[in-house]
Image (cartoon, rainbow, N blue to C red; front, side, top):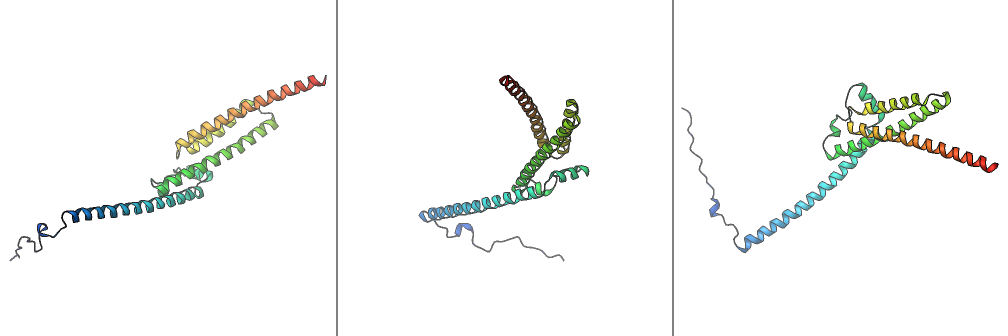
Length: 194
């Protein structure tokens, strides 16, 4: 025959028969627990803040050490998102790593772009290339950087596109102004010699 079970029966004292503090004792116990709780909250907040700071520093180091323009190009060749790794996740470490990696990419692109455009302009001056052809080559260079960034970081792609385009107009303006200034200086010089 199957065993039968008796319903649960408490063998301890009920809460109503416990000897809990009352009156002033209860208020003092409550204040003590509140002070203790606040102290523990402050301590844990202090250590959590320290841990966040350390995670942010480590994330920045990770982003700097593990990002480059070449790695972006390699990831694009493999049709991968370079930021689709757990290290760039939604944590303090990940956010800091991503921010520093984006800064590294932006700086490397700006340096590489300046070098590329300097070479294009130098070669155009040497070979007497039409300015429209040079402008098309510079536009293609900008498009190459933007297209490399779009799959992984479209916001940075737009930012870089704006910066590089603005840089072209500044140099065109500067070149135009410096040419005008040089022409004026030469004409004034020739006038003063006569």
